[in-house]
Image (cartoon, rainbow, N blue to C red):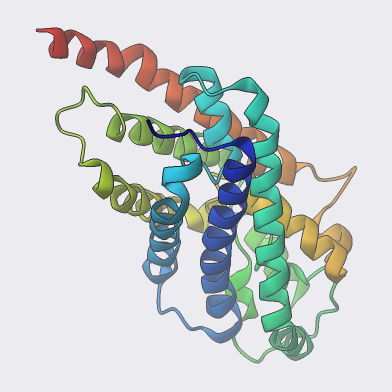
Length: 287
């Protein structure tokens, strides 16, 4: 009889899995923003997709590889995930993402400073969003303004921010996470005869995320994962970006768009599958 992994083992797995995801995914963001290393959005998107695939292959057999609070909460609501494991899982995910952000900062800090100097911005002051977006997310992402040698003009950032509303960003993150959770549940339903084999599922989950990033990243940088945004954002606030990374009291978009919306989307997407699609598969399977 196989012994079920302990909570301690699952927490370690969630830390490692989230670290893998954030290290490779945010690493690609750093490379793209600071070096122009990726030649298009798909190149960044597929790195995120492969990172998720590898994280699931690495720790999925231990903790289920949630690596995302939105997944953990959706599984609590719709899939019988133990309530007493929710907070430890989320804490582990945040910690894994935080240490991944710290590792990337140690690797890229000199280049971050060089780009800020070239563009004429001071870390922690307006304009430094162009490098802060290597950690936390903004709608729309200002990373493209870090390219070139001309100093950043304040009107460039103002013009960019006018292109995506808070409502639009909230809707995009909610819908993207809902689609993600719906498809994750569909691919893990044993009664779904069209679902991929279990060992193939991580590949398809990675591809789903890459596709979603390809569509939604121009609007919001494509979060779908509160740990992916909040922990690196918190690190960057502590590392010098301050209120640019984590504005408190005057701009709550980081909370609503990148924490509330993914959690809401996960619950809605999981609920749609459980209430609408799963009963169809159950009836078909019995027949």
